[in-house]
Length: 266
Image (cartoon, helix red, strand yellow):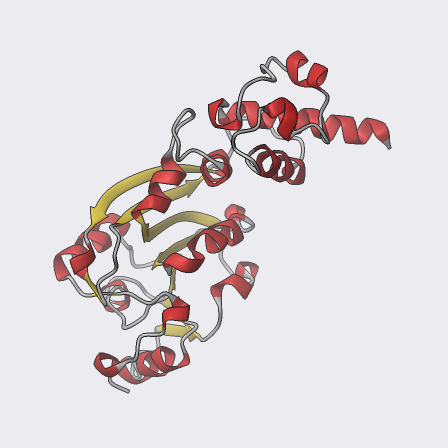
């Protein structure tokens, strides 16, 4: 199959990168080395696949679109170093890869970028770094600081587990079809040792999720079912604050209080 004739599938959020200057800038950012264990999510027509493959010993790619996967097999048919997995990255067990220094890259579909990021966090101990093209709005949310309107659940979860770095903006004209929004390149590097000591990851997820379930609520009201006001105050956090005004470390503190309370109630 000729990828130039590929029918874009909206359900997969397909926008294909074609600008060679942008492609080279992304490759320079990734800086692939021969023995790197790189996994590309959503290779599409192979814009990044081809230059990546020229640098590394072996390249794994994950493509959900069966027609694009078939085209990749045709276009790289003689290339034994390319391993194509025709599957949904959201359903993939990244523990199935042998290595613990995985480098994940890709132009993530806008419609499922957040679920993929949360899915990859489960495997953070096996991941060296992640370099993604995302909708600029999503990158801004990930990198937002406390007090910013874009600061929220995505910001806190990713900033706790990773060093986040917004690198550069990519304009719509670099893609076919042309999207209606800007994109941006972000690099996420999982911390080997998180900055704050967390007692329980599940408690952290609950506290962060509930804190932002209704943004206009104070922490006192948002967490009423989980923590008493006196506990929040004793932790050094003003209960009248809204979630968007708390730091990542504050959410860790609240999660540790919640976990401690659960243990003591058993």
